Amino acid sequence: MSAVNNTKLSNMLLSHIELYVQDITLMEKFYTQRLGFVVTDRGQGTNAMVFLSRSPKEHHQIVLNPRPSHRLIESPIDHISFRLESISDLRGFNSLLTASPEISVQAVSHGSAWSVYFRDPEGNRFEIFTDTPWYVNQPCKFAINLDESDEKLLQSTKAKIKDMAGFSEIEQWQAAHRNELTK
Image (cartoon, rainbow, N blue to C red):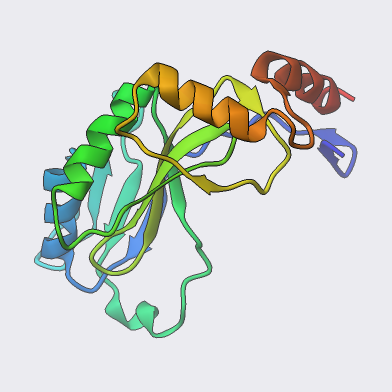
């Protein structure tokens, strides 16, 4: 159902995530130097919040909040995900991340996306992904080799998912999804 209390909801896109961090300097360095985020704002003082973005349309996508006492309980966030425009972009991030021996990277496909998963220095899990041209029912997850050519990656992914439940071209799935949202 796409309504709450009989009110139609507008589409929502992820805007930002705020993370409680223990070492603000280490975390800012990781996001700016390893992932190319830019500091767009910061609070006052030595333990001030830091606002980061990689999008010209978003003031901040990540906020680092130095509140180590909040880390005493486990975070309810499994992972934070960012969409990229192309497999080439994904390969670029994968290369940067795998060049750092302290970062463990997992490259997978979900059938409808190619993804890399990794953790920041305080254990927060991230996914960076780009869409495939297909849809399959979720969950779906299998290892991929990002060293394959685009053509080989497309072929190997399609061969793996073509017989899975819900398999379709993404445009077909999106049309059906739009219909569900407007009901």
